[in-house]
Length: 357
Image (cartoon, rainbow, N blue to C red; front, top):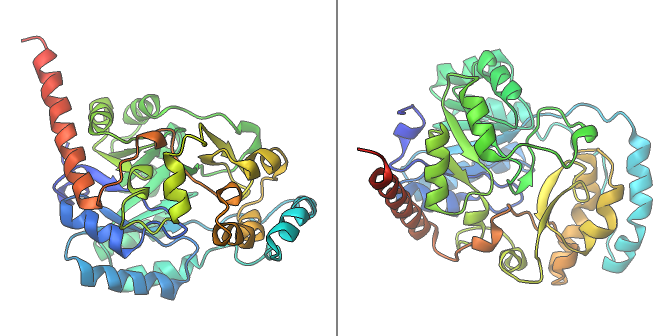
C-alpha cells in the first residue's frame, strides 16, 4: 500500500527514534541517504537542543526525516513511592559516588515548546510516544504539511489515534526494546503485551490509516512478514544501535551480542515505566521494587546510569534492547539499510515462488 509516509523513502524501512543519545543527526542522515526514513529522538532534550539537531541533520542530508516527541505525563498519584525507591537506591549512590537525581526535574519534556518549533519550521514527519495529541495539534501539523505518526500498543489505542486525526500509527509489539509506548501506564498489566504479528493484524482490522510495525525486527525476512500481515513499513531500533553512526555508549553496543547477557525483560527499574532491556545486576536487584512513576524514576536514576557508564560498568546501565538483540550486525547504517532491503526482496521472491500458480 502506498502512503504519504512510504512515498517519502525508497525502502519501507524506518529507523526508530531512540531517546538517550542513540538517534542523533549522524544516524538519521545515514539512514535517509540510503533510502530509509531516519528519525531524531527529541525526548529528554530541550526544545533548543532539538532544534539544533534538526539544523545539523539538514546540513548532513536533503532526504526526508522525522522527529519524535514524548507526550506530557499525568501528575504522579503517589510521590511517597518514589521516596521509598530513592532510599532503596542509596547504596547505588554510595557505590558510584554520585547523588541521586531530582524526581521533579521535568514532567512535560518541553512538549509545547517543541511543538511550537516544529510548527514554525516544519519537518516531513513528527511522531509521538506515550500518548496521542489532541485533534487541534494533529490538525495544525496537517496544515503545516507534516505527516503525523502516533505510537500505539493496542487496537484500541490505534482507533483513538485515527479518531484524533493521526496520519499513521506505529504499532509496537511487546518484543520491542526500550519503553513500551502505552497511552496509559497501568501496573496491573505489567509483563503482558501482544506480539507484533498478532497486533499488526488486529490493528489492520480496526483502522484504515497506514501502519508502521515495530518490535524485535532485525532481518529483512521479518520486515517481509510484517508487511504481509498488513503493515506498510517496518521500524527497527536495536538493529541500528550497533551502527558506528549510533550515539549509543560503546558498552551498550557491546552488550547486545555479549553472551553474558542472555535475555531481555520489561522493567521499571531505570525509569518507572515498563521498558525492555538486557537483564543485568541493576534490573535483577531493583526491578521488582521500582514504582510506576515516570519520568520521576528516570530522573532519580539518571546520575547513576551516567556514573556506571563512566566507570565502565554495564551492570549499572540501562541496556535497552529488543528480543532480537543477538542478531545485531555491526555495519554502517547505510550498508545495513541496503542489506535489509536485499533480504526483504529475497524473502518476497521466495514467498512468490511458493505461492500456488
